[in-house]
Image (cartoon, rainbow over all chains, first blue to last red; front, side, top):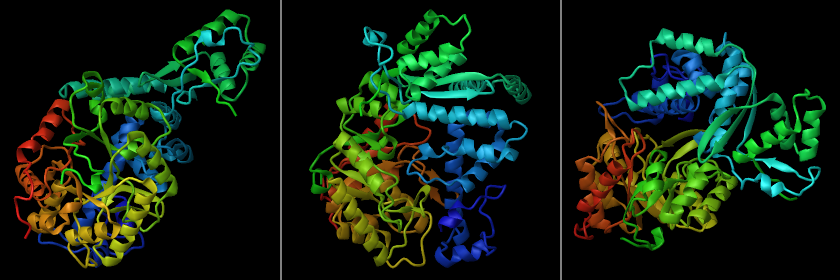
Length: 284
Length: 283
């Protein structure tokens, strides 16, 4: 039964007439499912087959609204089906359904051509959003907590919910725009965010290459995206990989331009502390 | 049966499912609610927002855990890691009982995320009951199994659904989460009398009752939890409480979720239908 339930639907969203090994699905369904007065065995099994795909594709659509906007509904559906066939859920929770999507997109560029680059970046961002939403948050450190301590001995930890992304496309703007449109539609169902062609051209405009460094983080139950300077990004990566505060700063300042004065670095820490990005490293 | 060993000797009244759409209202307004049911899987995480919200809810409200992925009816043994996570959550919430479904849904490590019906055989009942006992022993909290809505029946079945439910819960010595909407949905899909179902289950094992809405299609009914409860389901609920006595009751509303007030108002309608108990003789 599980094989039949997970078998992809036809283009008309019906159960396929044949099993994977070429047997008649009507015959197979009849072997283990009773018909009733209104439904054949095939039709009863089909209810579960359709529900499986509707549920899982809906879940991916909810987690990847930006990717869906780039690809359009039809291509997104094709991608979702291919992904779910290759990577069926192996987690007890649907929260983890998209965990392998970015890797899958990289392995199957044909499914997203000609916009593979933006699609991979968008999938990375949208998965980072899922992680930032419900990963652990520890008690944040404040600048005052560090006063009087030697920078060589201070080992900061980044909050576990913080995701650091290097992206080639400004997909953060696009996904925020998509969510804004969805919010408008949710509040007023007759409000249209513009014609389809206007939406497509807006998406195309927003997908011109523009390398960005992005911090995806959570504050007071809300996920935020913050673009940061490449050197600030390098500093955060250094802290995440275990460098002391001194070590991470030295690594950044060694090749930094003259404009990067210590006051700028202090400003980064002040801003990061205000957003609760830093916490103490756990002992042992 | 307001309080019994299957619901930790509690008398919880009428609750609703805790849903993200209502977080803001609940945390800001702190409405009076008898209890909330949470979907365990949504909170079986290491930390982060779900647990932060849950802790704030636990400061104010009683919470009962309801699971959707234990799959007692799947052939595979219970997942130890899953049980450990679940037990951590049980300790956090202090749930007096814990429920999951009488169904299967995973095979070879792949999850359908559906509640698939089982063939009603003695062999299946034995395997399922053994897994429920193992889970109950490990979690150290009473378990109640819920009857699911179904759309298919198997040639292999040797008994009715209520006979199978009875066989399982008596072998496992566990409770029942009696979903009267699911009984109604299945009765229409499989052409049986829902009252026969109610009369056929060991009513003294009912720990909790679920009520919900569903969607009527031309040839079948789908359990969608996106509508108010219909009158025939309320009548079944009245019958169930007449048999079991006032029992912890929960309204499920999971799609097209209206405002908190509307959901709570719908749940509280249950008060009109609760019977004092044992007025309807079991035949």
